[in-house]
Length: 311
Length: 214
Image (cartoon, rainbow over all chains, first blue to last red; front, side, top):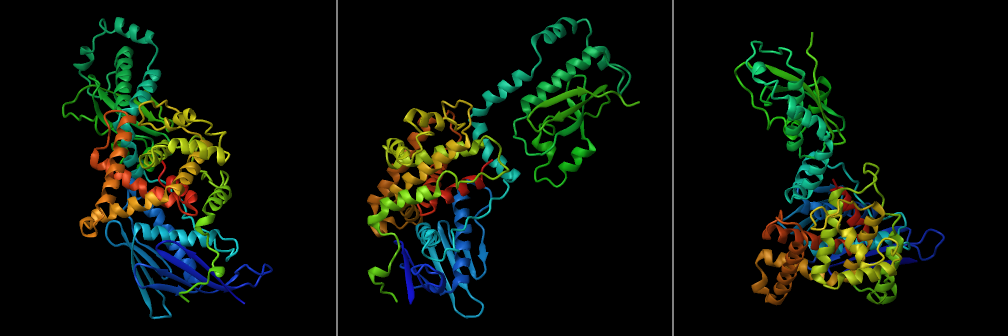
């Protein structure tokens, strides 16, 4: 005995015809025919189980795109599952095309968002109905990894309002050294002025005084820490060799081979995401410089340590 | 085949709407909203933001939405997570843009409860959501005058205005969004709420939220 099922929504009707082959006499387990009628146009999509499953998969994937479209990133693309194709017609309308290979018939319907929702809802009602085709369940598209581009697009919102500034300031303050080294430096730096080093004859690394190195290290730390605002998008620590002149300006930076390896093939270059390129001020004149090893940790910690001169 | 005799139809009828609401929410349940392993222990900041925006979207349609949510929480046995409106307010303050942002993130259980409540309430407001999304499309296509549906446009504009007001009043200044962007945000939230009001809307909303979570 054939069994009929209908899932009606205000804009579309999904009708199924099948037979019960299992133990439950009222459970449709074999689908013989389905028809999906739209009320705004005289179009009926009809076919078998394969087409029904393709339709469900295509609509679910496309719906996911509609739901996440408000958050920028990629525009709604085209979804093609088997014979079913869904594309954007104009803003807010969607074109559904069904073209089967064996039959020469092709359907085309333009749906607005509410009609698309009704189609989705009919299919979901069918998927959730335990009395009809228990192997057809609502399709949920797989989640993909959020891309770095998406991170950058979604995070400025929080950052612009200054909501993060409190957190960043708190973290920065907690990372700053406790007061006594600062006072010590304040007392001792006048007797050891930086001029002798700055006007020193050597252009590479004339073994600067430890106090100067310490001052430059703190200076570099503060600069980088204040400018580092982007969230972490890399999986391992990024290590750079950063060279600063006697005024504390960054004149050169270079990633370590490991960091260069992870930086390859990124959408946004690592040095643009980190505050290195923006702070770089290359100079032509040869000045004495000091090199530091700077580590951008994945837990948002910043480490600056003096690099011992290579022998 | 166009004519269906009533006894053959088994689709949910309007009279049973209340029963199916509860049944489906129970079937969806807190446990079925799965967190993919790539997320950590606490839920991403963007999710706190999105859920709060969805709640504002509900509030701009129905000003008593918050009372309704507290009642719905009791009905769905989610009082462990949302016992009263103060706790709900604290949970919403996990949104980093809020004026009373406490630097606390939501935990996953709380987020699940909020998503269940949002879709449950969206289900009750589905008529309004349909009207809003349809009218917005008609306004964009410039068809309102021809259709003579100015009162619907007024309803849409009122809702959008209320959304802007609620949003401005609660978020920190300066606001990162201007009026036009707030309108776009509201419209995309109405669409999300519409899809969340569907039969498996909770799952769809959950999936969509996680898909773009950072």
